[in-house]
Image 1 (cartoon, one colour):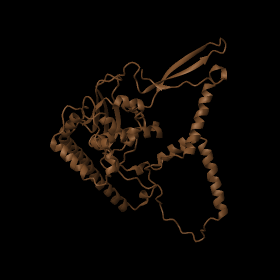
Image 2: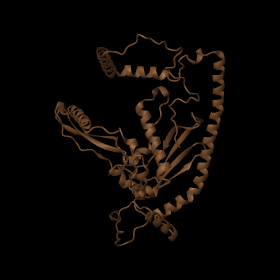
Image 3: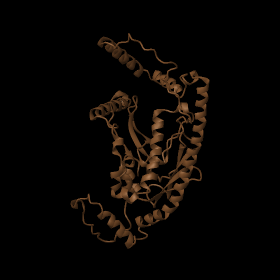
Length: 400
């Protein structure tokens, strides 16, 4: 269920086009195409302006604010129409408002229908959790139905099929690492899971959700006893605004995560950095340690906060909010309903990987960025020991 965001303007009327002319443009018979010389001059002027703007972030922000202020403003075309035509335009707006009311009612009924069928899905999710965790075994009918589904897949090569592995010692219970494997097969979630996270996520026994009384939903991650945190449940709740958006859609407002009770020295969301300093006068050395944020899937439970005022919104904040919301939607709409297909990898054939085109950079550009980062690191090291470079210290995520 897609939703607009709180910082995006919500207008139930279509904006007047900015370039709508107040009067018909006269035809100039003397108009002619620009020659090559004038095109070159225009290109040089554009390049000069672009360079000036690129070097002045304050000017860019000012221009952006000015442009944002023009969105939705009338060009004066509607006001220039005859009174009887303006009356009909106002009438069409009234008709459109009735349409918007029906759209909002439609979305509310869709939500109620989702909740109705979610109640029917719940027993199946409970049965899945019991099989995954080894408390029950699937029935013969369920096994046969699953095998028939595999046999109907004619695209599989015989070479891809391998014989089941024989287990030595005690038989395995349930399906080990079911949820970890399912999440790692999803591209968006895979990018968030670090090697250190995997050890903790092997203790994930179930992922489920529930709807709120008002528009919104809660994701629930259940864990067995583990060495990292004391929580049995980690939750994340997504809230929507009371009013509907354009087209009757629910407007996403914000998310709230669950505080993780980390055990001593086991916080996966931070790392310890050590830096060696030497006193210029006494020549004595000391090691300074500080805790800094660390990439981790468990940052998912501390979502970004939307700005208090719309004027404070930046592209970085908006991107983080959109990514956070999309991850929640992927877990709700993809991972939970079809976890077994993500575990086997079959769900990947239905993913639209074309969406990722254009997000990759040339390797040369990345190398340039790496070089600049290295130079920054060298500059930082030069602040210690009176300007001489100190040996770099390895940084690791804090785990022990």
